[in-house]
Amino acid sequence: MELVGSPVSSTFAHPRSTPSKFLPAISTMASSYKNCFPYYPLPQSFSLPWMPKSYYKTAAINPTLAPFSKSSQGQPPSKMLPFVSNRSTLFTRYTPDDWYRSNLTNYKDSETSRRNAECLRVDTTRLIQDKYQQTKKTQGESTKNLGERVNYIEFWKSELRHELDEMIGETNALTDVKKRLERALAETEAPLQVAQECLLHREKRMGVDLVHDEVEKQLFTEVDVIRSCQERMQRYLDRAKAQLASNRAAQHEVEKDLANKQTAHRIDDKCHHLRNSSDGISYYRGVERFDATISVPESWAKFTDDNILRSQSERAASAKLRDDIENLLVVTANEMWRQFNTVNVAFTNRIAETADAKNKIRTHLAKTLKEIFEMEMNIEALRKAIRDKGPPLKVAQTRLDERTRRPDVELCRDPPQIRLVNEVHELDETIQGHQQRLRDAEDMLQMLVHAKSILEHDLAIKTNSLFIDQEKCMGMRKTFPSTTRLVGYV
Image (tube, rainbow, N blue to C red; front, side, top):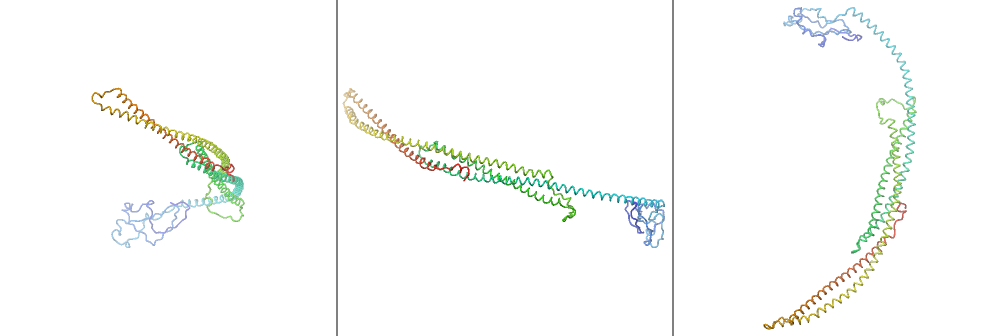
């Protein structure tokens, strides 16, 4: 069935197939027609009256031949008698009650449609007025919101301009301090070079004067102090460069935010002054569905506030760094000056000690030369004494040798024999004693000669050390950068 009120359509007598869900095929009911009259299809030219489709679907019949028809028996259909069965009628007939009910339904639908149309007209008129007032109110609120937005943007623009001016001034001040620090760092190279050259010259000292004395300790300390100052200066210089980069980054963010605020101010001010009669307004279909926003009022204000806070934080860090650099320049200049004076005092004391040692060496050298002369005379006396003992020893040994030739019992161990033997022993002991003393004297002479050579060498060393400390080192240390230059001023 179709719904009531659908368009009425005419159906002509052309059998058509229908889905099996409405009516079963005739073939499925063949058993009910086995004992009935044969079926004869309608001619194609037979015209049927129209049938409304308002209440029922038309039944399409696909007939099948009865088992006893002529067609099933092989006879041509043209020889079959035309016969129409009431049971095989194609369309269902309506009753009068159906006809009256259809008319009443149409009347009621017409009245309902008229009432609905009248209500729709009244609601439409009211809707138009309401929407006009709502549109006007909404546009006014949008204009008011745009005006407030322009004021907000103007406020943040003034804050950003003020912060930008402060940041530019701080960056310029830090740049000046950084240049002073670079000049002060360059001024420390000359004192460091002097200290290193002094250490290099003192490496040319000879012998025992290559001592790790107080001067060398203070020179190493001076090198360490200067390098420590250079390291601190370089560290603060790197911090200044990094701080300048941070200042410029914060300044760039403020400038970018300010430029964006200016653009947004121009756009929103233009939107604030747009009216329904303004030029340049147009339709932009679908623009309300395209949401390109990336912030909300809270995050928008927080973004600018964060930029200002970051800039203020960087300015505070920059100002503190400038104060630290100023203090560093003063402290390092004082440290280098103090160590420079300490090294000079150590040099003066060392030069005095070396000069005193040189004078003492000269005194000892003179005494050693005198003792060498006397020891040489003593050695000559010992040699003469040894030579003088040779003839008595020869006499005593010759006597003993002659007495060995006595015959038989005459070889008597008499007192002369004993005395000769003792005499030989005494002479041998005397000669050996003199020879030992001679060797001792010669050793002592060698020691004296060695001491003389040591004293002479030490005298040459002291002379060389005095020349290095007094002439070379102190000659280079007559000048030192002034405190004004050490703190970075030209």
